[in-house]
Amino acid sequence: MVGTVIRVAVVGRGAIGAVVIGELERGRVPGARLVATVDLGDSLADAIEAADLVVECAGQRALAEIGPAVVDAGRDLLVVSIGAFTDDALLARLRRGPGRVHLTSGAIGGLDLLRAAARTGPLEKVLIVTTKKPATLGVAETDGPLEIMRGPAREIAAAFPRSTNVAAAVALAVGSFDAVEAVVVADPAATLTSHVIIASGPSGDYRFEIRNRPSADNPASSQVVPYAVLSAIEELARCAST
Ligand SMILES: NC(=O)C1=CN([C@@H]2O[C@H](COP(=O)(O)OP(=O)(O)OC[C@H]3O[C@@H](n4cnc5c(N)ncnc54)[C@H](OP(=O)(O)O)[C@@H]3O)[C@@H](O)[C@H]2O)C=CC1
Ligand SMILES: O=C([O-])CC(=O)C(=O)O
Image (cartoon, rainbow, N blue to C red; front, side, top):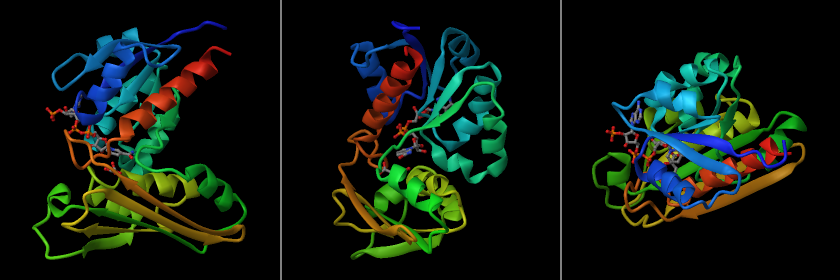
C-alpha cells in the first residue's frame, strides 16, 4: 500500500472546516487529497461515495445526523464535535462500523498521558476548567471572572455544544463522562481561551494549562483546532500508506 493517497471529504465550511479545506487544497497534507466539501444543503451521499475519510467540522447535531451514514458506508470518520458523544448510544452506533471513528485532539493536549494514567487505576480526580469571554459563551457580560456552570463532563459538554467539546475529549480519554468534573468560567479579560486540566491517580499528579488564541472567524473555537485536524489527517494518511 506504499504511495496510497487518502481521499478526504470535509463536512462544515465554518471557522474550522474552511482552514482544513484551504490547507488540503494547497497540498499541505502529504498523502491526503480533498475530494469534496459539504455544507448545509449539499449532498452528503456524493461526498461519502467519493471519500475514504469524512472529516466532521459541523457541530454536535450535524455529527449525530451524518455519522451513521458515513460509517455504515465503510468510510472512516474524523470527529471534531466530540461532545456529541455525551450520547452513549451515538458513540456505540458509530463504533459498530464498518467505518472507523477517530477523534481529533482539538483545542487541547495531554490526552495520551491521561489515557495512560487512567489505565494504572481509577483516577481520584479529573477536572477541566474552561475560561472564555462571556459573549463567546453566549452569556451576559460579567464584571470579572464568573463561574457559569460546574458539573459532570456529560452535562457541560451538552450544555455548551460550541465551547466545551474538550470536556468530552478528556472524559473519553479517561473512560468516564461522569468521573470528570467540568467548569465553565466567563471572563471579560480572557483574550485567550484557557483550558486547565487537573488529574491525579496512582501514577501521579497532572496539570496542563492551555491558553489558545480564539479563531477570528468564530471566537468560540480556538485557532489551533483546524491544525489539530490536519495533523490527524496526516497521521491517518501515513497509516494508510504503510
Ligand atoms: N474538539 C474540539 O476541541 C473542538 C470542537 N469544536 C466543535 O467544532 C464545531 C465546528 O466549529 P466551527 O467551525 O468553529 O463552527 P462554525 O459555526 O464556524 O462552522 C460550522 C459550519 O458547519 C455548518 N453545518 C451545520 N450543520 C451542518 C450539516 N448538517 N452539514 C454540513 N454543514 C453543517 C454550519 O453551517 P451554518 O452556519 O449554515 O449553520 C457552519 O458553516 C463546533 O460546533 C464545536 O462543536 C470546536 C472547537 C474545539
Ligand atoms: O476551541 C476551544 O478552545 C474549545 C472549544 O471550543 C470546544 O471544546 O468546543
